[in-house]
Image 1 (cartoon, rainbow, N blue to C red):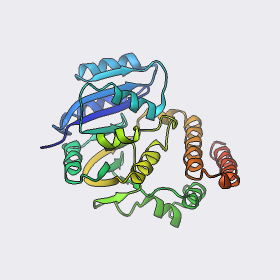
Image 2: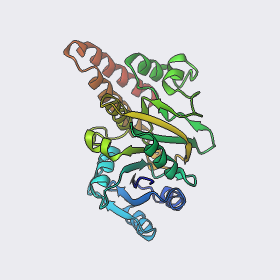
Image 3: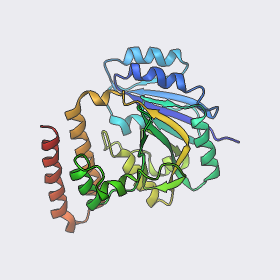
Image 4: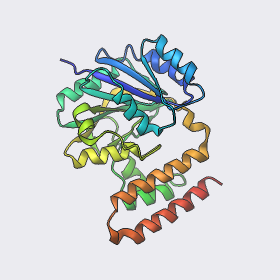
Length: 280
């Protein structure tokens, strides 16, 4: 029997991105029993809500912007069903036919998997490296420094695992652009940490799942396209700052001991410097 799936997506002025998302859902899987679209107090909430309700799904409008993790938590808490699995996806994702059912079936086959992620294609059809290793301080710093100017550097290649996209495998974390989380694991860990306003909430969840004994499994037979049309791309500086703030939150918690205080300070100044450089 295919497990039941709750789909949650979080929007912010995402009406146009939502149209292909909603259109692709019916053919993505019969396992979907409930769909909740959460709006983070955007200007376009009324139009998005009308579109979502016309498709027969639930629209939840938040009074303030809770960030991505906070929006997901609100959506899960608003569910009226008791699903076996929770699919979290960006509103600019398009599902290929059967994609959600493939993930749900894989979850049934792999009871030790706390999360499962599909193959994610960029808008041009190239494979996005969505199943990565957990960042250490060394790989994280090297990737941050060289990832843009020297994409083939060994630290970025190892971290992104972009040559390992065609077979099932365990990963350190799976991209929150589209990830299926077992409800039992989600509730055991308390879901996404709302302290991450944007970015790294998926890295943090993958790390916590691993520490709790769950596996993060990459399932390339399930395929989705991430068009990149979501509104986060509209304010590059704000998003860069959110990314750097979240990176510091993750690394400062990973290296939380008092004896790591000088290291945390160095990371903080290093991230500030990088933010200044990329935002010039």
